[in-house]
Length: 148
Image 1 (cartoon, one colour):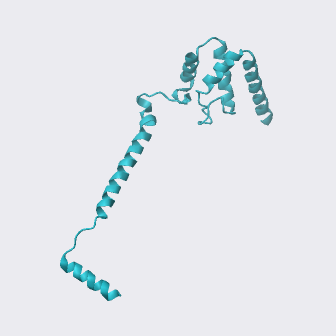
Image 2 (image 1 turned 30 degrees about the horizontal axis):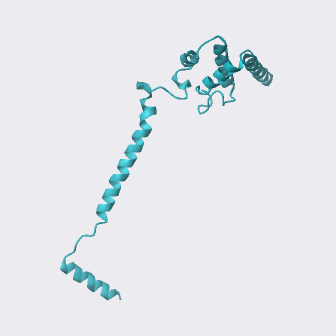
Image 3 (image 1 turned 120 degrees about the vertical axis):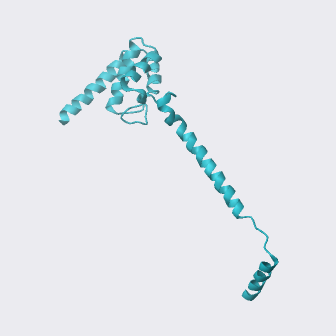
C-alpha cells in the first residue's frame, strides 16, 4: 500500500512539473494568479498555490492545462467552479445562498455594539445618585457617627 501511495505521489508531482514546463512564463504567472483565487478544498484556508495537499497539486495541474489550452482567467475560474462548486472560490460571490457568509459577521458586530450601548445606558442610570429625604439623611448621619 505504501508503495502505491509513493508511486502515485511521484506521478502527480511529475505530472505537475511537466504541466508547468509546457507553459510560458506569462502563462505561469496567470496560472499562479488564478491559483491564488481558488481554495484548496482539503486545507480549506489556503489557496491551491499555498497548499501542498495532493488534491491542490491536481487542481494546479488542471489550472495550468486550461491556461495552456488558451482559456481566459474567467473561463478557468468558471471551469473550476463548475467542477467544485462555489466553495472552491476564496472570495465567494454575494448571492442568496452566501448572504450568511457576507452579512452575519456584520450583523453580529452591530448586535454586540447595540447590546454594549444598552448595558452602558442601564449602568449609567443605576449610578445616578438620588436625593434622600431629611429623615433618611439624619439616620445615615447617625449611623456614620456611631461607627467612629
